[in-house]
Length: 178
Image (tube, rainbow, N blue to C red):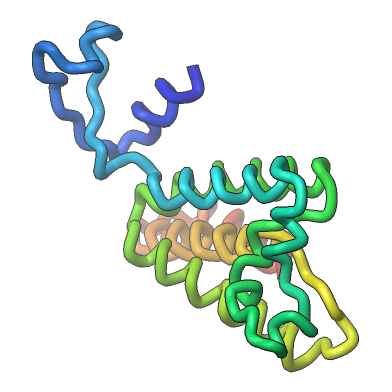
């Protein structure tokens, strides 16, 4: 199941044997450690899903220039959790879950810092540089940061390991993305 995949995600996870009489006994041999779960990614994904599915929530959270100007400051960041359509949500959420879970498990502090900085910078640039844009929704900008974070981390690792073919592929991916 999806939960099982999340609990066993990635080769970097540390394992802890389940203690007897715990809820994990329902699945023999299941091993996981709570701190290795991508909890930040999962929490953001749940809020984004709620914003999509609950009537009126997207409108209450979207980046809306006029509302922000009169004090609804939460919209400045919460707009990233909202989407224009279910299709927009599915694509953004799928990319966010995959890249977010991977980046968070590699380095939660760097991942969280990247999330905060990208959300602030994207909203700030929309506010300052696109005054004609009255509303904004979506995780696409944050997804782009996650791709760049992952590719940059892999590029540094592959350079250090002198794996030239990988360095070329990753560098080309970053150039293509730009």
